[in-house]
Amino acid sequence: MEAATKGGDTIEIDVNTTRGIVSVWLTNEDQKNEALEAWLKEQYPKWKEKKLQPVVYRSGKGDLRESVLELLKHNRMRIAQNEIAAEKAAKHSSVPEL
Image (cartoon, rainbow, N blue to C red; front, side, top):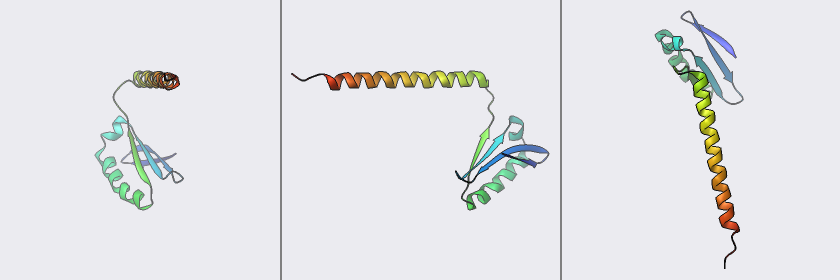
């Protein structure tokens, strides 16, 4: 992970050449900085020339703990639904025909 300073702000940039991704992490404050946004737009074609896909992660405004808990709850519910569907499919396929 490297840090880049632009317009007085320091942002985190992770260049992963193995996966071909440039990850840029922006805080809510960073997102308000027009000079920083302009600089990023200039970098996109340069990164793409190097076969790197830029990915920008922007901080949200919600509560992180609540968002993670909701995501975990949703994922667990989907897993349970898939398990039930698989059990039903297995029961129907194992019923002998008369």
